[in-house]
Picture 1 (cartoon, helix red, strand yellow):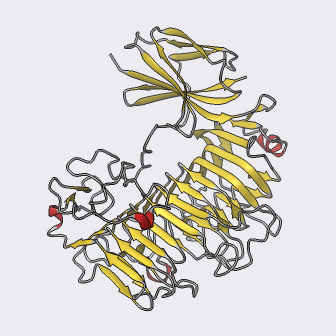
Picture 2 (picture 1 turned 30 degrees about the vertical axis):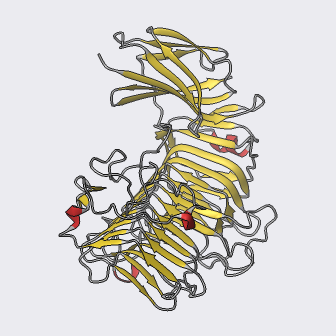
Picture 3 (picture 1 turned 90 degrees about the horizontal axis):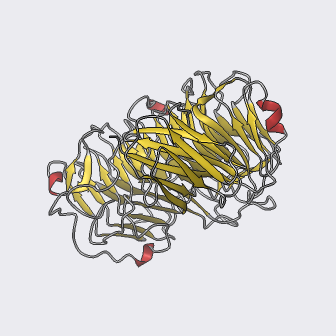
Length: 537
């Protein structure tokens, strides 16, 4: 008999006065324009051909405006007239679970925050967006911000084959992307950057209410340019982050970049950055000609304070870590990294920042000797395994880590497990990797798991009534499964709100304590996942 696990995942929380509004391809434009704080628009399956305009939609922190689709069944198609999803003068808006197909029309972006002065977009969440068909030109972008933006969350998105995956901030530095959280995304096969965050000019943080100082976190993403990458003068790193303002508000901002997989680049570095950066617990693999991690002058701005620690970097002939002409007035730390390369100088520091760089407790080795440290350095994504071998030489003396303790999750390794500071590289432990297997798929979250799989209907599982008041009935029409079946109500943060076991083919579930809103009912039969929307009235 198939084993079943069942969970109701808390997708959106709302107040009782908010509306839940069904929409379809024939009526959505008018409904979107009328949304109020706390409203949720349910975008039905179908093909949406007119531009999705998120104009002048302003929710609140407690009552955001939410648009939710039916995953890959809710399809927004590109049109040569305009960007597919356009945002102007909007705040506290969430967009979930849609597919955007640009049909390879050049010069249209999938999602773009755009407009002139006053059209700011802040506190925006993009969650579980699937973007395809935007590879017609390198200037065609998956997610783009050209107006000033702050406090964005970009999470669980997949961008395949775009010209540029994410292009955040304006090219002239006049419209900064500030205080963002970019996590658990997958960006593959872009022509140019997987992601670029543009530099920021001074005196750009003058908008009332915007975040003046903060940090942008880039974590647990997959950035790959193993295919489709441009070469010559159009070649780009997988990820490039520019500088914050040189003086004034934002000058001390920070990029925290950790727990990511950077996979292959035939010409450029996997990562390039300037400004203030903490780069740690990342896995970087480049066997196809490019380099590893580079910190260097960009837009006439030299890197300042750098913390480069506990990364695993692999490539046949790559420069593993390079600090080039950094600002000597700021301290740099290159500590606890593991670099495997046949290059004569796998860690290179040159120029003005040499005297201010603390380089210690790193391990470097040739590819031939790598099996004394890690399991497999293959360029094949199905075979590579950079977890330390039993008896690995990556275990050494204790690293003094107090300089890192201000950073998010600094105490954890790539898998999210508590770090043992006697290990070099991204992992703690040795033997069999207990965590996420390296792949070009979304990285698994550590801690409580919240599955945001796209919902779809299934005739053999019924729940009623829907919308539900205080009691939900669940009926499974197939052969009686193995019981008990576990039910959980879990907040997006991972908090378990309700937990119960089902022991019969038809069961009652008391949902009276749930706030009104939209939930996802998920039933997993071994590897098959069945989902249905549940609306709490």
